[in-house]
Image (cartoon, rainbow, N blue to C red):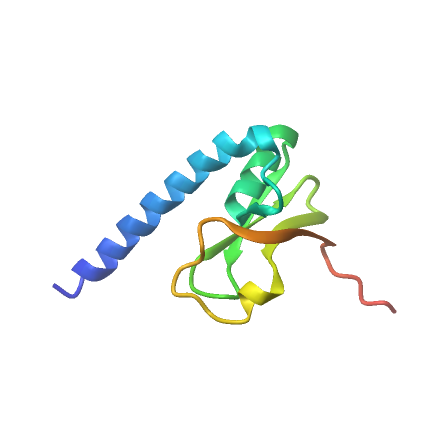
Length: 113
């Protein structure tokens, strides 16, 4: 019985991931965002589909779920982030589609020295 709950959560989590990647491929025709509304999975997968490069996965800073980023060359990283008013409070699960902006940065970060 103690193993049942983690197994169930993993199955649900995996199923949602497969659906999100499938939706990302379907949304690739619109460039990953529609009117500033999307999510990190749709954005990263659509950019990967059209431009190549890599999709990076890391833990979200807003919860236990993963966050997806896109990099064409391993140095420039772009990601779809929610607008600040959505990040003010923590969510049990992230919204499937939310209003956000594309943030571009470089890796490794420059130190300014």
